[in-house]
Length: 134
Image 1 (cartoon, rainbow, N blue to C red):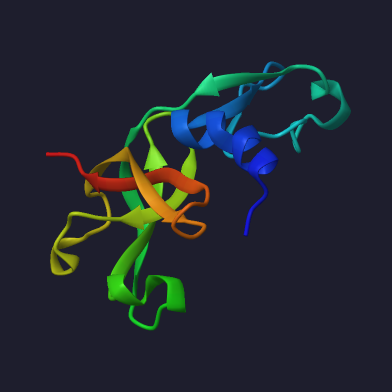
Image 2: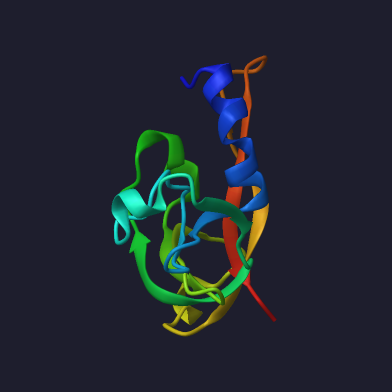
């Protein structure tokens, strides 16, 4: 069970698909980072929040057949690394797609979806998933 405070702090990054960009080297990261691992201390205080492109392509993927209990109703399902148009790799679930038709290079886009809830009266967790971009 996630704390409500943590849930609210993570909303901008998850709901808006935000990352950070290093002002020193220009590298974009997701999720957000406080400093650039390449520029190290030179980047402290120079990381700017940026909205990431929601469009990209499947870089790699896997079909999950034996899921955790929370995802039993969804199996089998696909998870993928998606390379966005701004050259960032993001891991996420592929939905609204025929599992047999998924392929490397397939165009996709991020959409906001309900992930789960902490009980009937608890916090509802939203996040992004990827759908085919047709």
